[in-house]
Image (cartoon, rainbow, N blue to C red; front, top):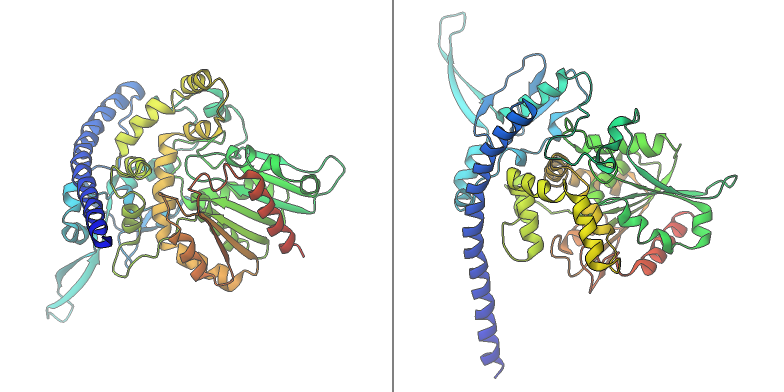
Length: 479
């Protein structure tokens, strides 16, 4: 009888997978077409509203870029620009997933698609001084012209663009920073009363399309009085999110995120040594910060870190994009991630409808729930711009493929701090295997997986227990 039950169940699972693939293929093929249409729509509207023809990353035009005194092109390692001479921005931080996202039909023939992004080898004839003809082989690299156009504009602009785009919200929360001379991040700080010096500093970094309220509305109220009297707690809104600046000219690279945290927290508050607690995307920023300040980090706590071991021969950024955003309609969180990651103009439309009108949505949620439901997660989800979310997603999550292994190796070899990793077994966005993979790279790390928790309920819903976990980590690290 066991065989009679198992066979139908296995067939049902197979049928569900086939149905999911078939429906997904149709849905995302239509989204490919919709994104093309929206590309033209936004170009026209941008031109008429802002008197400017804004570049986008879906352009098929690719230019050959050579050394011209401003932009230097790498001769090894793929289509990456090495650096700009006249700005601190370094283009190796730019993920190629920004400008190379094959359509659903093209993805069905991935071998051909992969061949189009590989370096091309060209042969040229050169006549030396002795009159003989020799054959030389040179390697050329291509990069989307939009990258160059955006960066040349960034280099030539003397003052930051403070005026929000027409499709972004201009309310006090989203754009109030532009009227202030300070360009620091918003930092929620709690600590000892006046006259009492703190023994420990803790930095909290939230995940993608979230804010500092992910921490301040959950674990902060649950810390004991002893912790509140002896620790300074800093929860940041990352660049482009929450109440922090959302500059239109930023490309939201890992370097920019780290620099802003250093300036807004470490330098401003004279933080010399600190613990780090980071969730999801914030874990990548936390690792970069820890590697940059190896002697200052006392403990490193990562929640659901997005780490994927890239198979040999795969392009790292493209592999991570397909893994995190698999273009499937089910589960819903994968569908949402795919919409955000693959479609520049569809995701901009979603931001136009949700983020620009977040005050209306806030009112409706509070009216419907009559404040019976905590809305901080929804508020954090809606306080960002498309420019911030789009570039952060690609340049941090996808672009991290070239850096994560080196960061984890550096933590293992160069840092002596305690490392703790938490994950939810039911996490449908980032599987628990991500944390196990981090643990395998850092053998001293403690990996704890909660069986009935997902990407959010890893913290939300067990706030008090999680606060005790953190306090124990800090207590042990401070001995």
